[in-house]
Length: 137
Image (tube, rainbow, N blue to C red):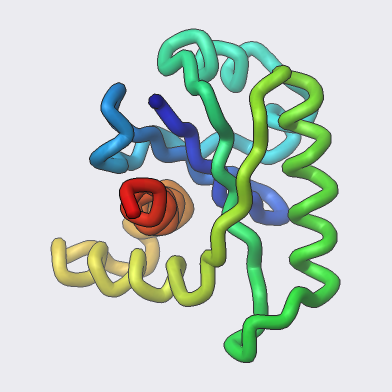
């Protein structure tokens, strides 16, 4: 089962995808959030290229595991995207995924400016991998 992950932000949406077997997550791209919510051509192209069976959206929760206003905002947008494209939606805890993504990119020698735009898709791949691993149990 191929899954497509969305790291929904205010301006950008990081996208990652699993392999066809649902075993390994990989970063794909970052799109402007407005293109995803408007079902614009670049977003539709991603859906056509990867043909996901499920959308996995990172839900930002506090370190204590509580959903705050940002989690509600992300949930609302994710549900709208899911309805528009007709693909089932799952949520996964995305706590610290952006921080871990930055650490990985720093280890690859990227500076803050070079990281811009990459962090979101790497974070999406990290929480997608967590979700994929949980599906195997």
